[in-house]
Length: 112
Length: 113
Image 1 (cartoon, each protein chain N blue to C red):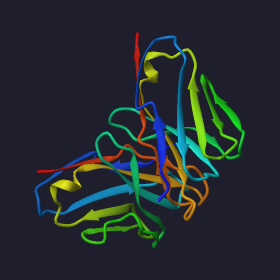
Image 2: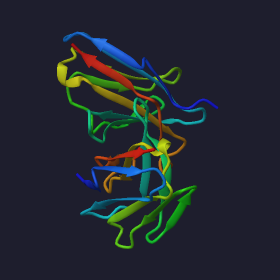
Image 3: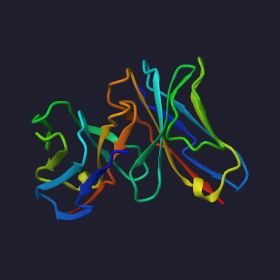
Image 4: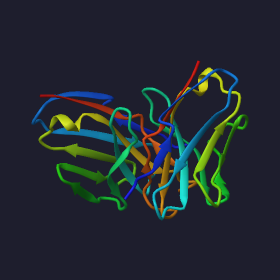
């Protein structure tokens, strides 16, 4: 099946710093989704991208759908302690839009 | 406006017992999905259901696992004769239509002793 590779696996930053993480695939995705998961909770949708080249913001978060359709990145500006969590990229599988493939996640730690 | 509700939040079973996980989708959502998450990993698709129908169960193990979404009541994921390897967090998600983004519940953490 399709695979999504996220990097970095983990990040340790100071409060106030900007963060960038990305997601790549060997195959094309027509939709890119970014989720955040807090400890003990389910993933929460942050941003959905539907068009190659699309750049979308949600508060301090900005995500882009790569032109090749094989990658996406998520930026967080001016990080705060509550940004701590695991960030997942996801996309519907080519053979079945009902199945989402998830990356392995980027664990973000923000030091106050 | 309640989100996706899953219960129980934590479930402990001994090897060989049955586990039943329940999921009530968001109001107005008729599409339900189950995903499994092992520690330190991403979520893996198990099954996709609409009311009274299993649409895609390609991610579900062939034996011991079953899912249903009856006309009335929550969706149920049932694991018979649990083994230690079934220990994981099981997440339910729902959406109002096929192509809409998924909204996840807070999961059921199953521990098999």
